[in-house]
Image 1 (cartoon, one colour):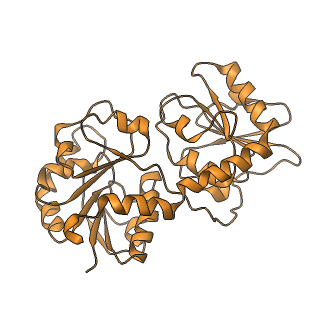
Image 2 (tube, helix red, strand yellow):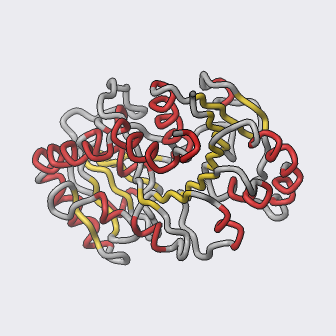
Length: 300
């Protein structure tokens, strides 16, 4: 008998968390699972090729948790029709008090400073990094990382390449932080950048001072693109310093610029190592790990 899974999402348009879940859902569906999605309203997720239901869990604004509480009766009615309820964010975790008696999975993608008491009601807790799991004291979180598609088609870059110039992509930082003579620095606005685009970069710079991991560092590995990042959160779990990229101590602008130059000088070797390292984050293997964790014993 097929396992029925309800994937609860907090947004209508996919970001990293939702893209990761869809990659998992594709594999589970191929293995005979029946997957249904929810989101607050119609959007890209409602058109993702799965049965879809409307369920509002509120946003991050002040007082928006009340919308999730208002959804508790509907959430419980829906949950009783499924074997697994997969709460795909900390915001979706607001539904846990209403879901007692159902098999629930809470996937924590964010930086968490405290663990709400009701999170202890989840049967399975997933985290994207060891650094993230260590913040979830008492929940026994399982580290699953992020799934990447290892075979992606090339995508035209959304910038105009300069002939002969190395391309340095920088997320959310002033380009002068990573200025390198002769290089083209591209300021990438935060969005779900995929490996098909990132392969056009010679180096990706993630200057965040608070980063568990995020989708981007995994996609860069799949693209064979070296990453320069701060030695914070879970980034050191993905970026191997001097091998697949370069790690820099926070608060060292000169060290960041030097790291970019070092990565460019070793781009071929680091890129090949990054691509090889990405094999352990492949979406098929990810589905193997997660399926074993979230399948309820009753389904066997």
